[in-house]
Length: 346
Ligand code: AMP
Ligand code: MG
Image (tube, rainbow, N blue to C red; front, side, top):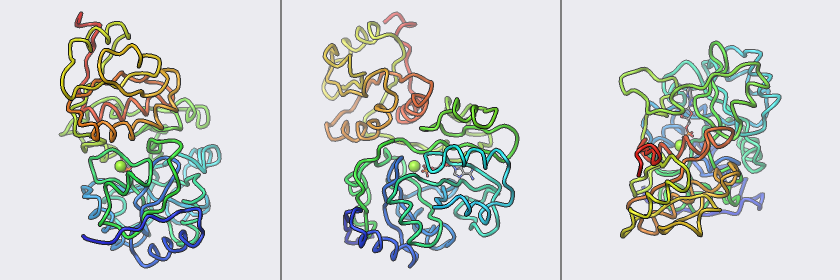
């Protein structure tokens, strides 16, 4: 692939039309959403969807999320709509919630990676919604990064990964959520969170009456067990550096970090700890602001690459609310390397 990549300002309606025309022709385009930037194509056109997998280098067993502009579109994409789905749509759409539902036959097998379910989301970002409407078709749109890399939260991140591989990147400014959507399965039983995001398990429970958090949210999936959400078993969000997530209070972490100093060794700490950190460090955001941490995380992982970091120690975010989404991405970026500095008496 050696295309000329245009970065187009999404505030100009002509540029939205340009991207929509490409999508109607069965091409791909990188687009802003409120979660992360997406690499979009017509979700109902198998040949267009194949280009997403090719451009990203995405494993073909990892299903794509289908983005719609109106709740009504749910009907033709699904074979059954549980009451809980309508309730969650009413409560959280447009917004960062993907629902996994029994698929109708109009969704190509490649879009759903051969599963009999399909992930559907109605995004809140005005550019994404205008574009879906202008394209006139639902858009499959995984994160617009090369598979395995941190997800892009700005048009510049998309350009880093996709220059020469796509014709158009629509620049809608930085993403205000910064982590991918919550994925909740409604195919049987209680709503099951497969991936945490800005819509929290607590909020889903309040709206739907119950919620289950799938163990894959916290753990490395067993390579031999069948997984509900195939995406979780692939390497994700990885910077070039080896990342280790540190559990423990700041005093214990500080003692541990002081012993790790060396060339290319960095720390990711909370805002209020930055001045006191014995290593070169970047701020995840205030310990009390999950939202800020979510918004910053992927850009920080890319920044660590630019700084030539080879070893990164990161403070563990809290595992509640939106913090659970930050924690989930960080342990994957760390390849599940975690250390309890208190317990080891370090
Ligand atoms: P991405 O679009 O790269 O943010 O990844 C999409 C995520 O949604 C992956 O973790 C997928 O495994 C998950 N997903 C999408 N469709 C389904 C589905 N039909 N069943 C289960 N998980 C899904
Ligand atoms: Mg992704």
